[in-house]
Image (cartoon, rainbow, N blue to C red; front, side, top):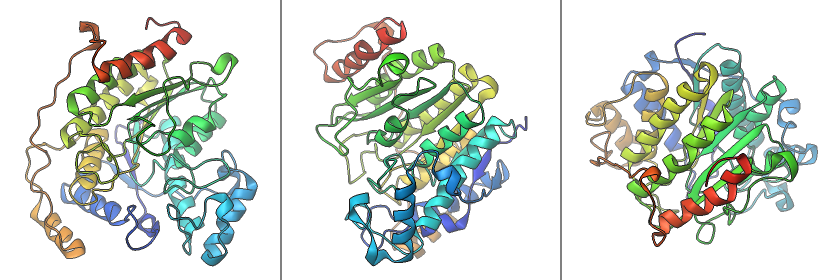
Length: 391
């Protein structure tokens, strides 16, 4: 196995553009690759582009009629069929939508193939993580569910245990739905409570299909306002123990940056520094519990497109490439010039929010009156006994 990680990148992914004023501004992708290059991380990883996902690959997850509807809307956005979630406020149709969505999906599928075949230990596609798309509809800014397609391709290649960990502020509903009845896939999602935020799913009681799949879906519904300490506590109280038990052959993670306290679409209060620590933890868990350290890391949400997203995902690339960026380092001035030229905003000065997050281990006990501990306990009680673990 090569010791170098892969960064999946094709400049054309920046054409995933729902139009002016939409929160999913593709400038976040352009600024991220710009910051990756400014730090020289493109020399620490192998930057490669995969081909777009073809029809047979898309149909591993998506219905034939839905793919046809996306193709039709892509050719003529005015003809978008809203019954498929296309041409809506969240998912406006645009010319070339099918092509760029298939390209993003192809990068995640290509990452999964390379990691499974031993061509690289880790692979990153920060343009991916579009976890809301359903088998038969677009949802939540997501047209094709590249995370689900990557997992489905791993199963097709022979994987028997794939773990998916989603730390986006929104529930990873599309991936959970795709593998609800499949015990080969363990889906874990930490997200803001569904009472408060789209898509309104991800309750602790959602634990997977009947029979062998029962206990294969795990949901931690976090109270609004959860900050670094609580977020890290919840992650470490649930994820490591489940991965140690499941022993996945591949770990797929989704790193939406919209948990950040500056994100305009949600209500958690997590810092860039805590996001970096979870990225680091996922890397360490891959090496600890996954054969060969096989790890596919994806992007996701994130709508503070200048201050947060590029820094968070640049940290992710550095961690995956075994060349972590010093949080105290000053952001290269060349990149800040690029930010101003593209957005007329001033870019952040350092790769940190100035926090040094810590957390209290679940093994030290819990407070039944604490809302965060109540959320963690609800998840452990719902799922852990189904997997033969102590709640």
